[in-house]
Image 1 (tube, rainbow over the protein chains, first blue to last red):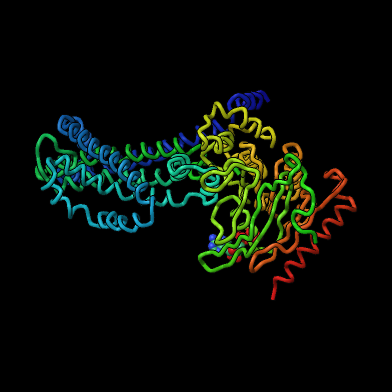
Image 2: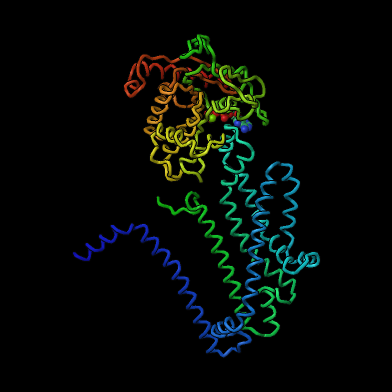
Length: 282
Length: 274
Ligand SMILES: Nc1ncnc2c1ncn2[C@@H]1O[C@H](COP(=O)(O)OP(=O)(O)OP(=O)(O)O)[C@@H](O)[C@H]1O
Ligand SMILES: [Mg+2]
């Protein structure tokens, strides 16, 4: 009797939806974490039992060790790769949105320019990177250009789609009230294409990282300003497999961080109104 | 059948009859070749409540959109004898449009949606606040100013749409089957709201509907259109000494009005078919 009383008291203080959401969140974090921990454990046991040499498959402990001891070489590389990825993504966002707005201004502009954007997109980036390496003033700029080119297209095509799928009647309404082109863009077309922009952002963020890595493989240059991909190749040449794994882990952590960041930005800007971010309550 | 303009306008400026809007033999041919309107003429006086009926596809929406300046007529012209018109030939700010769908911006709150027509004229949110609050109060949604459209029912969304149409204090309200998607009870409630608004503000309404009952209940003039090509088939006033309320719905006068509208509509449909 008394326990029941306490239970209903708590539920009166904390809204049930809030408690449910917290428990939901906890499960979403804990369950994958638990699965990951088990996999790492299996990895460790497998390596110890089978006696595979560390230059073929190092144990998780050896990788963790490499992560700590090689931090002074890996961390600048991580920083460089992060910088290139984020900067290229930012440039792709500005370029993609700007170009999309330009494209939808008239049908002729679109007919004239869209194919060029498609050609840039369908040409494999690895194939143009040697060329970019020749023209760019430095390797870093070349990597930046490669990552930009790859991230640019999904943002562009999503934005074009978004700008063109604005509710017909809302456009009529803006016409009726004599809205200028600029007002229609600012108050209607851009906000209406926000969900499309966010899709472009999430795809572009992932692709920018991939392109930054692939382009650096292609560039293959050494030096102080090299990123994680180069450190990865270098570790392979030197048969320093634990370090290779450490670099790999940093790369995937970076990928996860970018994914989380773009998803969060997307949630933040859409959760109050857009269907994709709503929790169904019906 | 009584022709347009033969009955006295409700309000006349300095004794002279000044129509609010005059469609003068307007035709509309779409690029697909469809002749949606053919020589349609319609004169609407200030303060009238005109219901526009007709078979599906007879050009009611097209006519309404041409009046609103959304899409040009192929021939003929629209005059606004009692309004000041802008460079596009429209009395901007004097016309509002309510579509069949609420057509709200989902990323804006109710307040933001109603603010839109004023925002486009450069009125800031702070300056527009009294008008927005008033418009929301008129449709009974004062307490929902901060809600997002997705949090509202279909009827409430429609009310927001009406509030947005009213916020500029237009002379002419064009409504294209505004309540077609709503249930009967909500529709009757909104009908009463529109009627109250019309009486209180003296606004002119052109109301497209498929419902004989709705048109007979609301309007003091009925225009029935015929299809292929779209043109006016019948145009007659509906006068009543009764107050239009729940009692009116059960009165003999209402029944007769329904019958008359219904007959005209059947006639228009019948003579349209070959
Ligand atoms: N954008 C368009 N392009 C080509 N034809 C059109 C267009 N809009 C309407 N039409 C045609 O014009 C005619 C009139 O259409 P309209 O929408 O005005 O009819 P309506 O009376 O409003 O019909 P409903 O009662 O079904 O809404 C129809 O035959 C339709 O097919
Ligand atoms: Mg229609």
